[in-house]
Amino acid sequence: MAFEQIPKKDWYSILEADPSASVSDLKQKYQKLILMYHPDKQSADVPAGTVEECIQKFIEVDQAWKILGNEETKKEYDLQRHEDDLRNMGPVDARVYLEEMSWNEDDHSFSLSCRCGGKYSVSKDEAEEVTLISCDMCSLVIELLHYR
Image 1 (cartoon, rainbow, N blue to C red):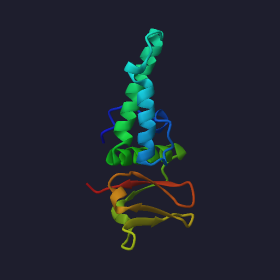
Image 2: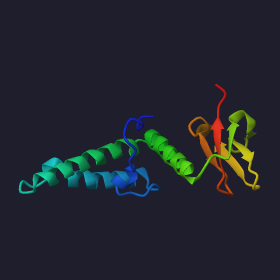
Image 3: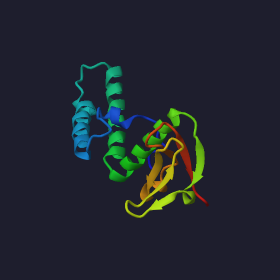
Image 4: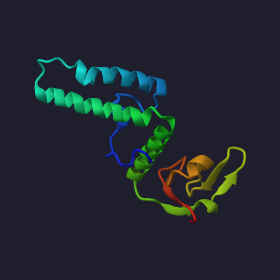
């Protein structure tokens, strides 16, 4: 993934955007902030420390846009955020191989029943990218494994 080398930051908060924002909304936020923090837009009478802060913010805004402005890297980042949220919920309830899950041809997804009566489900596309899946009715989480 392209963003793994960069320390974990909340790229949405850097762009002052909600994670549900569309790419066009993100672009508007990016354009506003990039102009606000652009080094050439800083006045000459601003203290040096403030200029350095603006340059750092300019760089962060640019990095955020590089990740969130591209559909593929945005999807990867969103999946990683979701997985991080699941990890913070608590321990993994079980480790399950993808091949042990049921295939649903109608919606092209894999599913597994949870002990609460709910189900764990993951789309075919997401199955290659995610490692944690939450139940749709309770707080249990399973780790998705692949035979390699």
